Length: 616
Ligand code: GDP
Image (cartoon, rainbow, N blue to C red; front, side):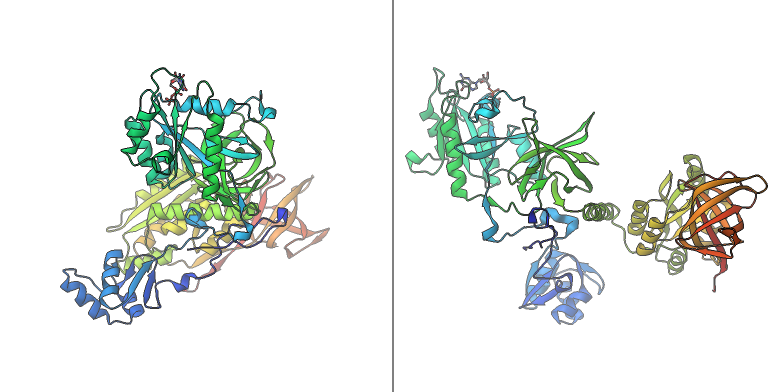
């Protein structure tokens, strides 16, 4: 499946990589197209029957005769879907829906006119002691580009060498372990493999392994017969031995490039590199520099001074400092990019390895990365990926996210477990709430505490709750506006309490299917304290800005500091300028006092609420 990005950004007119599926939308899957049933995953007998226009009983009967008992709503795996399709005269095809969540699978197809030649990416492999490290060092240190000579290098996992005005990118880690490890993570970065064979030792077990790995990855091989300076060197023998492995030199009618070198004495290195370029030219390696970068993490570590530091190999597009990148489920802003000579780069085009800092987490080598023009995009995509990951981990089915919904499902016998997330003002109370909840004994149902931690409720909590069907209990804390909005979007219920037994009572009632809330609190609005004014008679007056909703005189209120409820009480007086006010709306200033409470600070939030009756 191919996607084309769409132009988004003016900065260098790079094209965004966000997958935009031109051909099919989600609704186009699980449908018959031209006699082919295109599907994306497990599908039920009922659904398949509908799409193939075959009575479900026929499908069930057919599978029954094959020895498979299935019911109408049972989902079928790939094999069964295939068998059913063929039986009823359809071809079938499984497609993967590629989206931001799994951009690893995204196959970018660039218009030929946007493609530019890019440097080949080379990995050096071979048997131990045959000279891989020496070759890497010799190439790195050879003064092919005079200006780079004498520069202090840093090991970033890869480096570039320029020869005859063209660049070659070398992956630093020799040996096939790193290569295979990358491949096992689905990353293919190498265009050409140089296999080093010592002329005095010949083909050895790891030579064979290296060949197998290169073949498996369908990457062309160049053979570097090394140590030709040694007295016992016998290049012909090496060629004969390799012939037995189907690696045939051009002079013997084959198509593999052989170079005779001495890595130690710097003989034949330039010819080797020229051959790499020649092979690269034949491969027509190209990329589109005018799109946002995408590629693979080669190395990553936590640097004491600089935080997460990763070497990214740009495989397509161009990476700029200031770009936002998503790696795995983490994201960050490229704060600084350096090359292997510690030189700072502002841009890194295709095939360039760069060490970057600015990621929030240390990624794993082999992870794919993708750059985005805005932080919002990167954050949203990272969140989606985190969510997809959590979903994958939880593999949860359809469960309710409200307490009422929960007991509905208990009644229907659909669930036996109530997943909850607990947030409290400190770890001690989080544990206390957890303990109290786990103590509730209702036959047939148990409480599953997914998380019980101190601190404000976060958007991640909401996402976790949404994927696992959990209810969030906040104890002595209040969610901020963003979190509340997210919870609304995700239809996650947040229940807030300041007294443990109220909380446990409520849960127990729900578990017994007796939850009958008659009153429920309704938040009126929030005001932020901008200034604290001391008045000798009255005490402390909070000079506020109403940041959302309205604040009403005589409403119940709570004082929130850093997401934690510090006090619960009532609003005592409310003024607009010098005049008493009944209510003050959003974006207006007001002065207020809280009954019997003076310990207010700038930055505190006053949240006003009312209790409203809930109709049964
Ligand atoms: P690796 O295990 O494949 O990385 O091999 P090394 O690069 O560590 O080399 C193993 C040994 O062979 C070292 O002692 C090198 O100095 C030596 N060596 C590597 N290349 C050459 C060469 O071209 N000629 C000679 N004489 N020795 C070499």
